[in-house]
Length: 304
Image 1 (cartoon, one colour):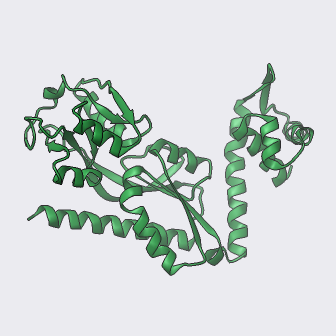
Image 2 (cartoon, rainbow, N blue to C red; image 1 turned 45 degrees about the horizontal axis):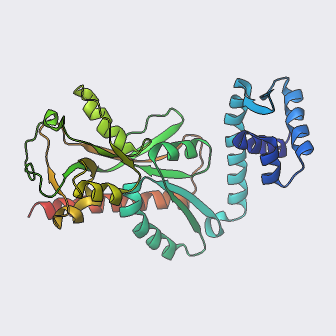
Image 3 (cartoon, one colour; image 1 turned 60 degrees about the vertical axis):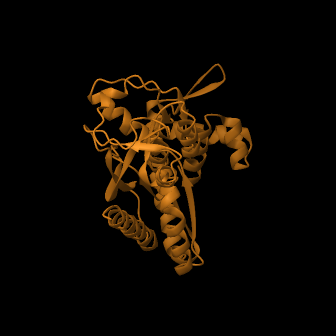
């Protein structure tokens, strides 16, 4: 059993198909099938059930995958460190949408000026997608809005942010500072898509008050939601930093609920078995520092 066997297994596991895995690996289909058989014979287990020409991962296969991902990840880190990866390698990070819009561009510009030969590959996605990527060793770390609950992941809190209620510009409830949550029961809701941590927070809060949510529109796009609210199609909850300009310009208006503040703690998240290089840790620190700088700036602006 070799690292090569593990790499082949990972490709098959992720593709759920021998032919696609072979294409990804630039190998022949029989060679991939043979490698999987060799692993199964070596351990005396079945990694995949083969039913009607489809592959189904067994429990043994899932367990093997958990170890293989991080064995190969550790080997990659070994090679990076021995080859001076700190100066010529790549850091893979992910952020949720708000952080991707507000913090990511500035942090990357500053970091790349200090480390011009070190590449940073970044993706912006939903919180659930980022957590899956961390578990599958596809990211070194991620910055995620709200709470992360997964036994395989470690997290470090950074600055808080909050969601705000946005309403159509002519809504008579504009600028109210004591709306009741139940006063929204006849409103139509326009929310972020499933998998969004912002969406999960809104659903969690409303569930506490036995108030089920059935959005009429779901979107990954903040601007699409803001425009739909402006058009009078419904109301929404979005991160304050992303809708400040829309509110200040009067494109939409806002109001405050008396029951909940919708404040959430944000986190830097990584896999508990992940080795974080010194440069990766420096990048994490920069995100942490800038998030608090932005928070303090907001507090100062709101105090006037």
